[in-house]
Length: 305
Image (cartoon, rainbow, N blue to C red; front, side, top):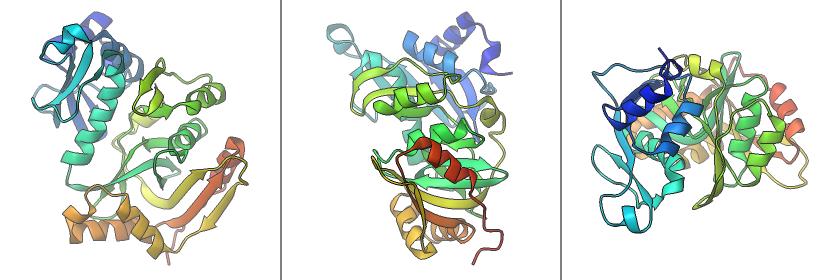
């Protein structure tokens, strides 16, 4: 059963009382919230996600007003995981973005049996492209466009690298878009589903795009490494895909990893397996149609050097 099988009333009842438990990839979340904007966001974007049983959850999270006078004087929202509040409260209208950011934090800070890299991951024909990039690089916009043009979403934010063989494990969740990217994707993908934009967050104006149904349905299907691509949007830049030495790409990936040092030799081996099976590139673009065409021409390296 998926979340879509619940009525609106049942979904909200679970959020307020027993908790809404659902799976995303290999992980299960149990979510509590009395807030309508959280319920509406989950109902809109998570309809295709499978419900989970009552026996276990990797994360127990709550999105609710703070337990102090601020809930009355200046409406705010708090993110709590296992009873603790790792962040400062945010304005109440930012409850759904805070839920998304909080779940990312839970994965990146608490899951240690995989190597975790700050990167978007997409897949086509069994091979995955890992796209690490800092904020403002156009990573999420590019990811959003590609999953509307034949690529499967594994993750918009977190590459989960299996330690044994470097395979990429799916964690498909809504794609986070900021500022100008929101209108770009609404025009490029009018069939896609978006949350209303939330303004004046720490990241500017944000909205989230629903992942393709097929990506969610295949959320237990790993992908082989194919490419490591460092994207960068530059206004007016010609589209270019420049090969990178694997050694340099590995160092940059390590810099983007959350738990590389903590994993020690296992982290090094997982990263080496990933890079050793991938073609590595720098990617510069300004035209989204050209970027989509460039990715369509990618071919994996079946016999890595």
